Length: 114
Image 1: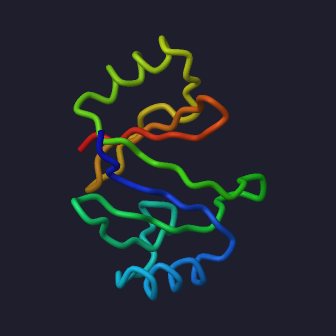
Image 2 (image 1 turned 180 degrees about the vertical axis):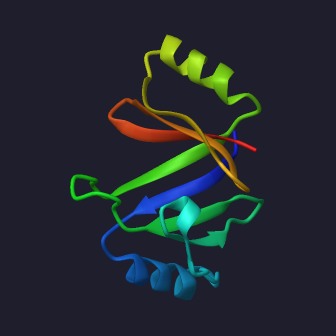
């Protein structure tokens, strides 16, 4: 298993980015509109972390790992069979890949296919 994208949703984007920068020596870029205006930084071993503000007033803070998969459609099918609930069907983000979000065990999870 490999995390490709670690998404952090918070009302304090700049403070969270500054804390990670000072603690881990990473540099966050400017906001990326294709990722919900997340500011991103690379993860060791590949992938990236993104910190963004909620996209709607009802969106709660969350830390959501997106697991790298080879076939997102097959992974979605397997997750539903295992009791997961699909919250966001697979969506392609040009230049980034395809993602989906599912709920299971009281937590948000994501899938990412390059």
